[in-house]
Length: 626
Image (cartoon, rainbow, N blue to C red):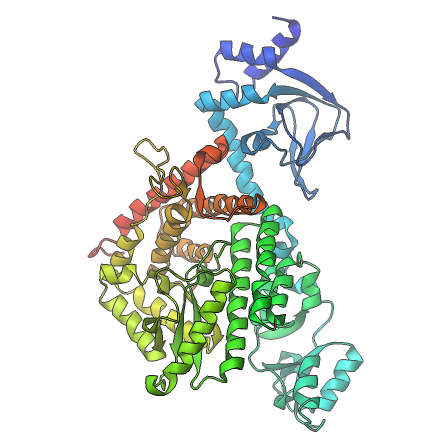
């Protein structure tokens, strides 16, 4: 053996993950290892380029970066890099640069892949390092993304203009003009405290003055109370810019009061948020609300897909993507309902249009059907009012189908008279499901435990959610029944932890990542959330409530979160790749198309799901105290 190879061999013997390999393997590695020198400041790896070797730092220092240019890690002697790209798609994921004059060993990709596949201890050590870094990257992704890391209060460059409720519109307009602001916060008056500390009761904007005062011909000395908006969407000062953006999208508003301990401390405006947003999802939602016909709404389908693909390409996490796509889907519903009321006239009695399932959980992706229902005012009389709501439901559901949200094959839509009920009837239905659980009935009712109001009297949906949160946690029989139902869909793992694939249909030899992954995870998290009376909708938020309630085995909550994120992102990336290739996206993947790293981590995630289902079965046995 040459002297250079002997030096490499001795180095490998001293460092992980080589220390546990036998001498013959180490000699083979040393004989195939090349050496490269990089001067300080030299770029070693560039994002997106093909990668053919695994890099081990012999001496010097290397800095690894995210694609955004932000520092990700700093490596020294014995550290390694490049494995993430080799295990994924043979493309560089994290650029690298020599911080000092650096000597590296290069192990060719075929040899690295052989070692990873054939030697479990080697693979485990590389994989543990990668998983640690992957988890750190997922945790730090929020820190590196301005949408998630910037609190709303960073947008506030000045204190808000607050005016008393008794002030005239003329005087309010004068103050707005003098201070060059587009809105004023209307508060109650109190002699014993500053005006800005009083209770917020409304907001008035330039648009309100134009539309509600000037256009209506009201006198300029009208009270601001006559034209202000009283249903106020607001954010807390410590919420993130991303949350403010979603609030604006959800309620179609351009001004959000920023609150601290119930007191308005500022206003976040649309231009403020646009500085932090990629402009894509906002652009789509604004075009939805600006559409004048169903044809214009249908034409937005490519924009929706482009928005989805762009978020994936920018490494958004599954929560961000699911929430943004749910907001877009909700916006289609809201616009269609607005158009329906324009065509059929105002509703004869108040109603609330419900979003159910993944949209209500804010976990919607690009492949989705529509799940919806109607809550009707208790004064609803079928003889007098049914015809109107049949026409409205057909208009909206047909419109959603035309816009890419296909009809629900199970018929869970407002077009089904079974799912058009009064508020009282809905309350009775939930109480019956909880107090008298029947497995067959509950299996068809799971989706109704994920609901959000999107139009009309949305507070009715909140009332039903509060009712469920209060009653469900007190019914062991109901929770046991829900738990049994949640065990119906199992992860695709065989006896020896190999993948079990579909055996028939067009997707044979594949895994349905929704049916066998994200759906059973959402089901079991929902059961735990009901048990702790959580009022959250999103699975990640529910999981936070469950972890806080301390009902899971130590560490399993964090494992569940990682498993949900991993499985969801594999599903999301697969759909994005389908779109890129011009294929119709779906929920099925073929394991043979995954990298070694993805297959191994996916098996681990499915094992976490399997263990969580076993715990669910144990915890919610009927008659057992919990």
